[in-house]
Length: 434
Image 1 (cartoon, rainbow, N blue to C red):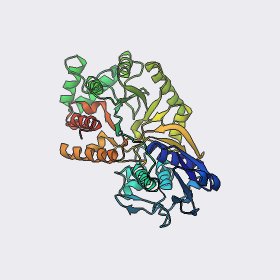
Image 2: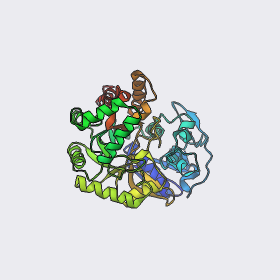
Image 3: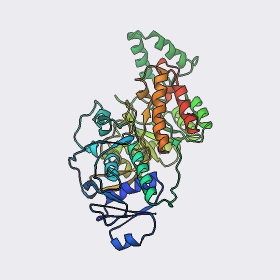
Image 4: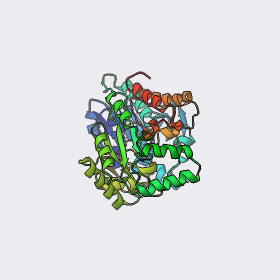
């Protein structure tokens, strides 16, 4: 157990130390403000305060962990060996940066509470993030800093045996639309036919009729393939199905359709199933509650995991609504068109509510790559290179890799050529083959 001496034990301090020490490094941590208790402790210990007590392992603290509310903090990013960091704390500290303050800034998504430019869906842009602006978005910096902290501690306490963590994957299969042509209802099908005719999409029109009359397989119906892949790996896939109403943004299947319900139940026999909250549920807790209840009635179990439509997050309301509905985990944190680590970590962490200054029970699993982000790379070779690079970063810190693919990604549509191979590469990486 690590004992931390500090001048003030705050919720922020406890939150970030537990993420770095316990979740990443596997070491229990406790805190004291009493010098005599600190001196008496005969195992792993450090001081985290403004002034060093003696010759102990000391990290000079930044004020952010002892503040309340949100202020406009000055951030100066510096190079640090193989990575970057901020909150430089001078030569007297055992480490040149306050990694705990910097980690808190990233994990709490401090920057997303501040005024910023958003896209047409109201989403926080990757280009607005500190990680993108200073060139470290591609690294799980919080985990890298944690391992640097571990190295420094080991030099001071060479006999302490740190637990070992292993690399893992958690593949996400997002299902915004279960089928391309099937189960659309009469009015939507007629509308689709008219649109095909007036857009001169004769090939699409032909395929639509072939599927509807049972002569061809629906291109989005890739579930048999995915289930076969699930059977080949020990890591559970996580499916997110949309059950919200048809709207401008969400064009899924009617949740009352018996065949659609049967599909969700079938998938739940092999993989974990969660709710893909509709676009309007993101800002309306009553709609979210209704969708949660709908999904629970289908899977006949309590809903534990969710993911927001369009990967949209409104801080802190989106996560507060999930906490209120007792949803345990969320998989929205990430960028649709940018590979990288939105919160700077590849280890699941708890949502910290900056307005209420409290750690909540909601576990955030940030995703690191979405299939759409790979489309910007034209050749399969370039796509593979980008994929291998992100996997290598996560393997170095024994983290959890969370890729997001869609049901249609595994179709034979030209846009998704080679993506089955990329998914295989991900599964192989989990078994040490990439």
